[in-house]
Amino acid sequence: MDRIIIIGSSGHAKVVSDIVEKEGKYSLLGFLDRSREVGEETLGYKVIGKEEDLPRLLEEYDLKGGIVAIGDNYKRSQVVRRISEIAPRFPFLSTMHPNARIAKWVRIGDGTVIMGGCSVGPCSSIGSFCILHTNCSLDHDSVMGDFSSLAPNCATGGNVHIGSFTAVGIGATVKNEVRIGTHSVIGAGSVVLKDVGDYKVAYGIPASEKRVRSRGEEYF
Figure 1 (cartoon, rainbow, N blue to C red):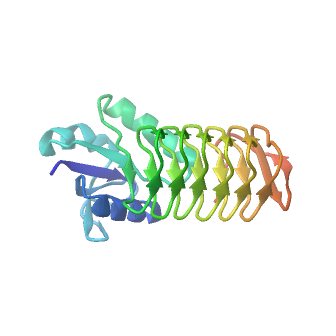
Figure 2 (cartoon, helix red, strand yellow; figure 1 turned 90 degrees about the vertical axis):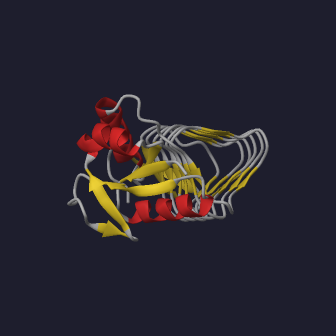
């Protein structure tokens, strides 16, 4: 079985490692983490190096590729950029929990993680390096831009557009045909009935734009 690595080793990486095990396509060698020492363990897998060790590890272990397991959308993009500079040919892989329900004619980009209980409707398009968290739902003909995320138990209607780097919070609901811009955040439990612009924080029932946010601003 082809060996892969996970970049990151915190909470989100625990979930990703579990999905990799359950999917059964790859053998997980261990984690890369620039903030931890080699040999430290998470869920029985060791930290085997830092990002700068990747070219050596690719050669030494004949790695098939890896998954960037960083929960924050913007921070994930920064890690992807660094990895691409350090190892330009490194394959970024996607992983999908066996319990996820993916309809026909769905496009899924590289580096995307789809967790257990997720449902994706027909003719939807999920960009690269997205996260669909546990039990979320993306309905038919919807679009998620690169590095966007749906938190646990959130749901969209059909023909929804979620911009790149945007995060939809836990338990939020997005009405059909709503467009949410790039780098925006939708608060937990919100009900989004109308469009939300770029770089906005919106929440409430119904949700409304509360303020402007900056690129890369933390939202967890």
